[in-house]
Length: 324
Ligand SMILES: NC(=O)c1ccc[n+]([C@@H]2O[C@H](COP(=O)([O-])OP(=O)(O)OC[C@H]3O[C@@H](n4cnc5c(N)ncnc54)[C@H](O)[C@@H]3O)[C@@H](O)[C@H]2O)c1
Image (tube, rainbow, N blue to C red; front, top):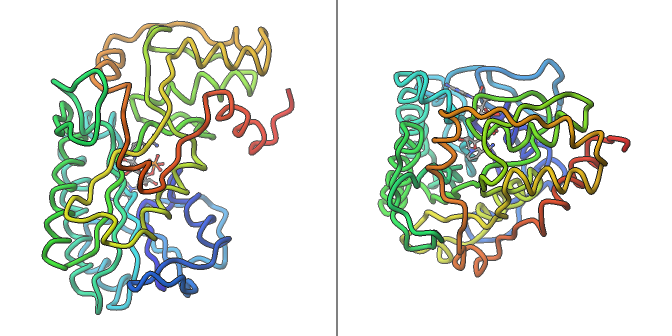
């Protein structure tokens, strides 16, 4: 099994690479677990610290010659995570189109050059929904993006379905909730606060929450999302059928509930580091996203969510070795 992870220098991609190393196998086209022989990471930037068990390729996803050289003809599995995230794609339309749409298409075309259609796992987003969705989004709710990022993701969902139908690749698209708690620094995603209001106070730093306490968000932990990507890969094609696009299970929490959970776990001194600092632009974006989902299909396919916000915060504390 030769695996390519794009966006592997990023938050989810780097975790996925470590999880695959630990696990050592993935399902092949017959569904048998087979040893992973090589994991190649592609990104325009990587952390300084490298893992010698991984192959690092520094370069742009939309560079077709680089993709051909990197993938050869024997790549069996592609996890496509490279992206210009929501705020970035909204701020720079050209860049968002180049990476999120053109880059994805270039990658899909590189999949066509493989000796067998690779399993292709693509991380879409709940930003696929932006207008006219019901109070509870379900498996039949149609995509209705209201941002360039969301529109680019939905275009690639359609392409994944069509490339799968044609047998060019074996696609699996998971629409990710907002991932929380994300360690490290804030990123350009408009939902970045959903990690910031937990992460920063636990580090003794003030966090300004740009949305109101009653604003809900649909979230999933870093560990669960990595599990979901691997599960999406390993399911047989028959489990997906013609519709290769799935809303992942998650948890609904308001900013206020997240801070309350933080208070319960870490005390007033920590929770009081959250300051409420409304930002109309971010509030409008978050308000445009669905908050409640009924993910029947994903649950039936064996995907799982976190128990609740408290367990998500406790997982972060344990993983980061934070002392309360
Ligand atoms: N984290 C979340 O809350 C969330 C929610 C929904 C969807 N997603 C999706 O999941 C995927 C991974 O998200 P993440 O949180 O790890 O993001 P991230 O920003 O940490 O990682 C994305 C990576 O893509 C790389 N990249 C950007 N342009 C590139 C290019 N031209 N060529 C190669 N690499 C390029 C970046 O350098 C970065 O390392 C993305 O597709 C994102 O849209 C994430």
